[in-house]
Length: 233
Image (cartoon, rainbow, N blue to C red; front, side, top):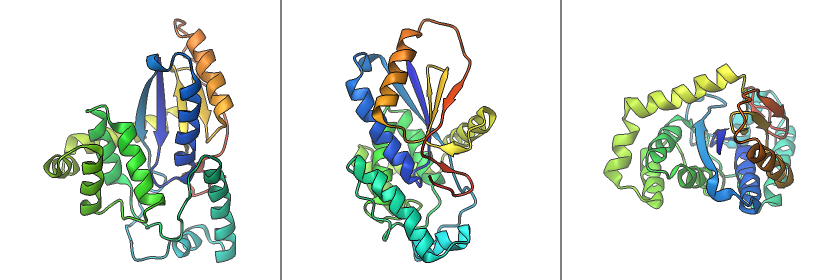
């Protein structure tokens, strides 16, 4: 059975959703039969990397809110992270375009290491305060996952991998996905947002029971997510 996940490594709720889904999957009795495929999604594809810019200042400018409002919004995400053992370090987060990170995820998919690459990119963005658009940083991340420096550098210049990342985003648009994380179970059930593990487990079990069925209708369950307008709730 397949689970497709659209996610952006600049989205805090995508990291939270990853942890909650993994919690559910660990409890699922047929977990060895589940194939997880990560898909690229950019909340802000036009973002210009500015690692020297204050993260809160950037958010205030983009959303037109005060610093106090921005920090309140970030605290909401921080509280969600605490639920699953993530200590978000938003004070040090860098303003960086995520596309090259997604290219690396596409490369990692060819080696069945996409989940590991996602995890390291999330850590770099939200815990370590690193610039996920910087080649040196991306090489370090790739080496942590098990690749060589040359493999990472070649991946970052690959037109084919960039095309695959863009194809994922086009597919998301065709499916009407405008907020992430977004999970699709067995090409049938859509779950939007960082839902609780209990709900993920329920959908896993229902999808498994219907695994041999041919119904391709998409039913969506809404939850905490970040959308393309920069709203995270």
